[in-house]
Length: 112
Image (cartoon, rainbow, N blue to C red):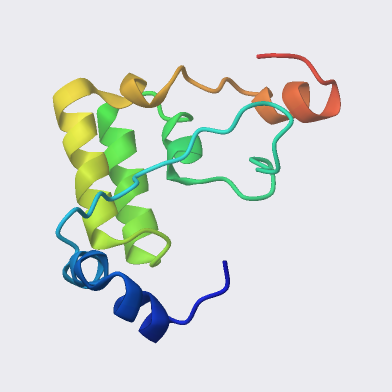
């Protein structure tokens, strides 16, 4: 459906008002991709990809600080990542990616 915002607002005034005020706003903090989908973790790693390389919670905090300082993640997302590390630990993002993970996964095609 190809509709302008003005037309949408005219047809659905209450829904448009809720969207504009973000009354039912839910922030998406991450996306998990299934094998074979369009996400290329090797060329476009996200914050979780980097955090899964960490051994300790302290390393995770350093990575989050670095990504936030470079502007690669927002302040809000950085805070949510820190909260998750604080409450559940770095392993809550997934198992650790060992040395050679990308070589095994993308060159040899093995599941690591």
